[in-house]
Image 1 (cartoon, rainbow, N blue to C red):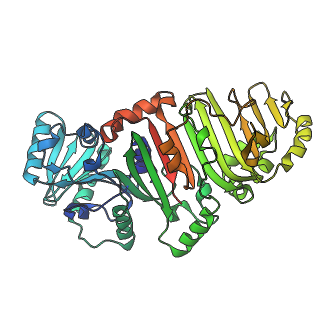
Image 2 (tube, one colour):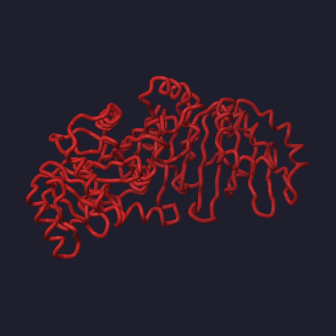
Image 3 (tube, rainbow, N blue to C red):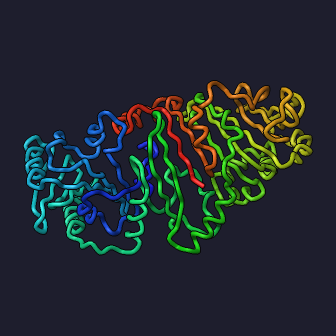
Length: 456
């Protein structure tokens, strides 16, 4: 799941499946697949969709190669981590001619018959096999495993239509997930946002995720839905996800195109904190923060929308952040006096105004505090709100947007979901944006924003 999930994230968050007018070729999809994905070129917003195909299928003349790219292009991942592709064959004889032409140009080798079917190696390590219906391609096969990979693909092409119940369920779920692309698979979430979404006692391998990808107004949307075929796990998952309540959008206007990443959720801190306690990465982060202020109690006091914005170059060290949240209470304020006297050596907490503080040490500086009551004569979204961050406006106007807000259409789509992550590629430091656009602009057209949503 990790490898196909990484392919999905590079794809700006893509993946899942749908049925085709001629689905004989899908019978070649390995019954042991742990994740399935499709890309529907007919729905692509890219003006040069074949450029994307050439990155997946290393054939120059895609228009006359014997493969039908008007049908969905499927990807599969196996339990051992192997990843492959399945395409529909429209003319098996033409596929053979194409491979011969590639061989003459040193782009193909080891064309041979295995089990009565034709196989070949494209480039240095991509193993292919085909019959009259399906063309299978396995990526990045070690030289020592090429023959076994050929045997494996031929076996898939010859397998009958009877599949295991697990595969059938996986395939049906994929077919029911609509979009330019989609994926269904087991394991951790495609964005690997957090393991906090897993109920206690439930393993990641027991949970599946279906993600559909669409594009609207040059924004790529990846909509995620977690589920399980096990009734007990499904119930535990549904009960657990109630901790992540529908986002109301209190801070959606604070989300800015100047931020590399904007994250939104809505939680009850008392129920949310136990999840954090079971997450090693989050606890390591909190251990560092708790050395200066008691973030544990602050998190427990949260009740409502939470917004996190990350600015700067997240690929290197120039990063800034801002956290905003609604509170049920502000009892932690009574402990600030103690925090001032117990900061680590070299650290200091200063008063900057009513319920506003600044923490500094030799390596960092950030502001935190409480805002409540009224603001500019208007009632605040909630009577008490927490802020923490190291942005220039964090101390003076933390609830004012830093620059231009994200499009209103995106804001509206955030509301009602359990988790939303908005990534502005232009603010990613250049490397991520360049990599994603080079690979997937042919599929999606011009895009600068990716929105990942965990649906209610």
